[in-house]
Length: 403
Image 1 (cartoon, rainbow, N blue to C red):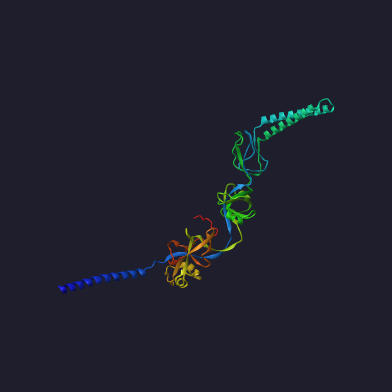
Image 2: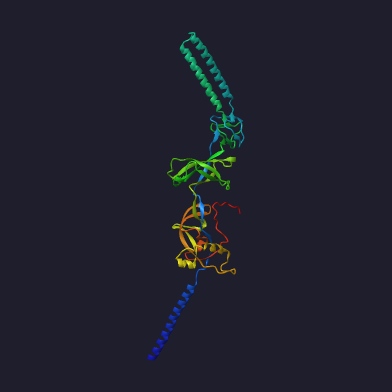
């Protein structure tokens, strides 16, 4: 019985030892297998950071308005008797545009002028009688009062008759006629709009932080979406003396010459104001920047071996190799194997933008190779393959292209 027990325990120990040994061996093999596995290289596009001349600008959005513009109307009512213009005419200051029927007013004026003439005759006669001591001074004073009153009545009627004629208050371009011949007009009814288009104003606002960079007389460039390829040059002519307490913006006005009357009041325009001397800035395409609540970042492309030796230092001369590697397939095509490239994420401070470009104030220097597309699948230390067959747009003044 004792030997049986010993043999049974020995067999049981051997089975248990084999089982646990197999489990350890399996775990070791799984660990070795997983350790040999690595994330496959991610295909990206790159761009080399470059220094470019940068003109600091203040940008704003404004509205165009005419130097002189009004909806013309008459102070008095009446029936339209004459129309002296057509829609869209160019007119001169003082040109007759419209007359109301005024026969009764003309007749009343003639009667008042006759009364004034009679008062003049009575006054002259009584003055002669006064010098001959035939009438008293009070008679002459009464005649003088009657004469002035008659003349005033005639002038008042003449002014009322003039109100029935609509004159162009300034030279400009007429809009669409809103009345017809024979129509009765109430006082204040709009007849037509008149706009002076040779020069336009553009009103816009800038943040108070930009006040030290703009001033009266400074040149501005205006662009409208109607003519996307044309810049309209002007200058600032007025700056509001106060800051809006709600928006903390300051209203400004610029004057824009308008040859050919291509611009119209009411258009909205994008305003660029050159502010200060040109600077040298490191620029990148905006697609290279990843914006996050905790800061903006980019991925720098480095050689894996040099990264290990330099503890994260950048490859100074790797830009050209990374840029030209896109034409080759991933270790294919019969060419030599490309050096192993990895990426490192760094924080950057960005400045102003222009078109597709953004100025980088810190974090990247000229010559650094930066990932411009494919960042979403990267993390620190990711192995990458560069394919620059398609490049991110880096145009400082992009224009829409019809497809």
